[in-house]
Length: 383
Image (tube, rainbow, N blue to C red; front, side, top):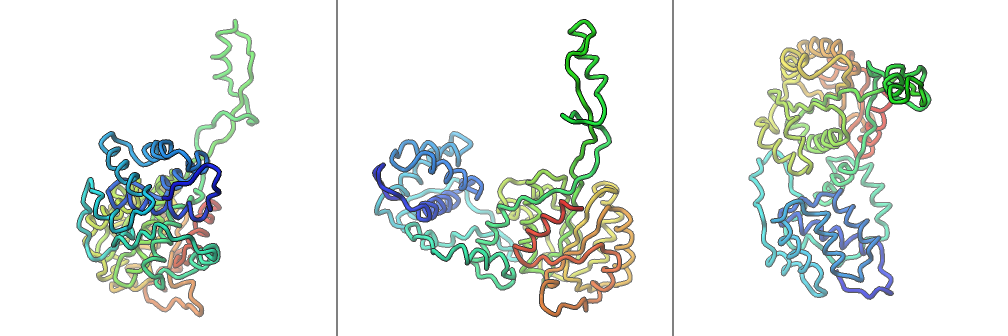
């Protein structure tokens, strides 16, 4: 970042690029500089300006550190980044790390994009066509993205805040314009006023979030889509919904606990360590049978919305898949089948597994682009 006097006007796009570069530098050093914290730091700069270096360093500490031992590393990164002529190579060589990245299985890429110091591009202004490029990226198929575009798409999914499906709660809640008086609460309050009710309270029917269950295909045919769908599941879980997530290829694996990490990259690294059948075959029927026999009573309630993500390429018995889909449909509120190929022109459900499953699904939903997942997030709120 370049020093600037208070009266100098700073280009907002260039400042945003600097903030993103600083967040990337902190992630490379091992600090949890996720997109949400980077946005908070950018908002802080808009309030503080860039005239006082001490204020910006304090804001960086407040946003990007949670423990005392992380402060020296944040300060070191800030001092390197603040220098007017600091090169990317110098930043990479002089900045230490507080932890090393865990080994990642080959079946899943979880790189945050910092493969080398040249990736920082700290002093490059943003492309004025970035708004149009962002809109094109929203509608680009995940299978056609370059590594850089894939990182941008992952950042857009991290910003996703889906609308949660709601249902009526059993107990009423206090409301300003409720349908009936809250007699018990008013009588308890009247004890302090000699038995006279001084303030009326009202009750109305409350709602709560429906459980959401996502069952994601991670076989070889879904390789270019599965990690984006798992990031969508991570966004669902961070939205506050009671979410259960399963991954399947040749076997079913529950990964709900692994996705509870705040950072999507850290969560997917734990998922990669947990799942052992990445990029293998597909046995949808057997996986759904295990889901129905082992997990339905424990995790899937009658009011749940179940999302099955797969292209329908089944190596097992399609008849078994049909029977298990029928059983699963009776156990949930809505059953949606998400197919990344469904948005392609001239798509026809030719896969045997897809033809067996569709009669028991409430809808076939495309999921191959950021825009389709944004639309799905809105659609969930309407169920």
